[in-house]
Image (cartoon, rainbow, N blue to C red; front, side, top):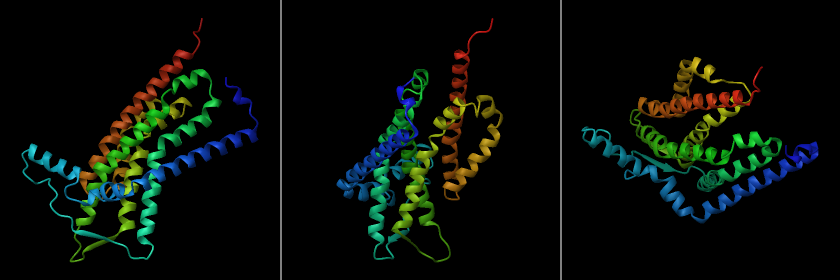
Length: 271
């Protein structure tokens, strides 16, 4: 056991305050990094999905050709414009980009601070069982961020930006555009934490592999509902969101099973 387990309540609060301070400091450093490369971040990363030569659109077009569909899956137009309707609109957009970018850049450091606060309360076996936690949490997060950025955001921008309602032209505010993209990117990054969540729930006995298998069909329905909420109302986007979530659910079943086997191995033999 760690001797830090004997810390008083006030000492725990002080440790929490220190870890929160370091986490926020990490986000500030991330923001500084984003500001230092703001031209690239804004022009190439944030505004990238607005251009028809964006890597995701080119990939869809190449896939269409490979499937023998010609240019049916190629995106040929971008019928919307961005504007700022308030004096502070552009500045607010810049601040939002910097904050979200800072959080993404500093995510592993923030998770490390959370882990550093929790770790002293665990014994050696528990620490060994979650070895590499920061790495795997960060890997899942960045995988989800990449999926949201390269798959969901471009499809959502294409669908909503080119959707026709009578003769009304789409002239979105820059903040609306940023809220759409950042919510998709951060949302999928957090959704991809499902195996980690299941791991801890299985550890404390709230879920089991058998439970997850039993309610697999129910989870499939919930999956479709979540996909419908976070994506535009087109079937393609919903399927693209549903598939990785279903895969993560199956991985979660495997993770829960491994946790149960670990618990059985720790139980003393009878007789």
